[in-house]
Image 1 (cartoon, rainbow, N blue to C red):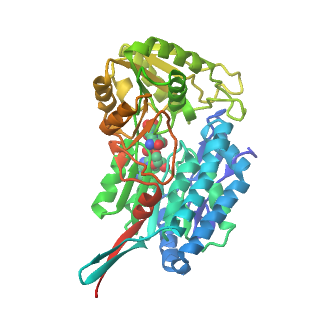
Image 2 (image 1 turned 45 degrees about the horizontal axis):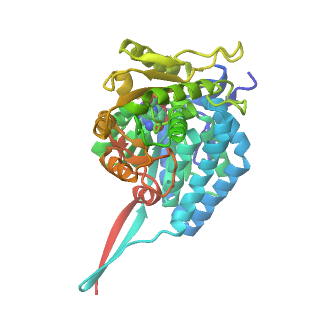
Image 3 (image 1 turned 90 degrees about the horizontal axis):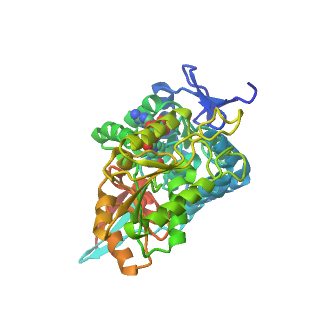
Length: 483
Ligand code: TXE
């Protein structure tokens, strides 16, 4: 019992239990053990946080210059770096992801998010349009209280991707992390408050989506919502926020194609498809869960991919050699398994995986699943077109470019795609015709934080990243002066 942490809300600079006193158990998917209790916050808790954020927005924080805010963001990044090992351990325990991934990606990227937006506001410039007899200049103004709702797959990485630009532009924030992964958000709140920051600028409220999350979205004093999560939830968030004309950014799900042409560098394409399929147990909205392969190389490609997937080390996330850790929960694993079963019923062959690994007594109560490859499935089947969000990919064969594009674009989602070819003209041609917000050629998940990030179709609305985030987290205002 002594290992069970008590997590509190951070409201107006104070750590508090939920007003009604209710809590939610937070279970680690690594062994199925309870690791923390978090507040089950309700409307009243959210109202207190929003009120603190509103007061802070109007107070001393509004006097902070852009350069002072940039220095604060750098100081937060330094704090994250200084606590890198602790944060990586918490993230791995809470989410089930391999410690080596948390250390190499999640935590460094969280620090990088703050440093990036510190630099962005130091070097930001505004437009000036001169016209006969007048000049216009455009300024960006902070909006007020930003509501930030984040999922469980990249907990600190995605939370900081929102907090950093929100603060950079002078807003105050109320964040609602996923109830499944509250640990690093809570620790970040504490680290931020070791710095000189007015109370109420950063508030973190824990709880369930339908309670705390909904209360944040519907509150009239929250002028902006940045949400990352599932498409169904995104629709509910939009339905609540839109009638109040809140600024809204929705980063939702994906069913992203990895398109491998016969002229690709074969080994790179296999390696890239494997990484895109299984990184973070396939629980990244950008994961390439549909692999489309040109017919002439398909047998060889499938064989190589299956061999590599079988080599992946599934197991204890705290072991630095582990490639595939636990899924977020046993309930989520059941959902993923139901899709594998559906794929089988729809005519697919489970070419590898599809089952749980035997990891011994200590770990068998965790949420592990072997990397799974489904072949021979029609590209219109549900298992091939719905987001599974687990270590499951389906491989489909195409005859030519036209068929590859029809398959790639034939889903409701449009987040990203990766294209593997050595033919430069084809790379440009195919990229132009893909209905996705992002395309990678001969790589996957290579991120420059300046570029627009976001999806088309049911993958979301709006763009974040670089100046797109600066614009989203502010109001652009024009001032016209007659000369
Ligand atoms: O996400 P949810 P879940 C996908 C993936 C997964 C599915 C569901 O397919 O299986 O979504 O995952 C909060 N008002 N992705 O259930 O529910 C919730 O508390 C306001 C893709 O975890 O969308 C959490 O903080 N907020 C995705 C956040 O929304 C609400 C990453 C996301 O939870 C709310 C995660 C409400 N009514 C899952 N209901 C990606 N694109 O990266 C819930 N929340």
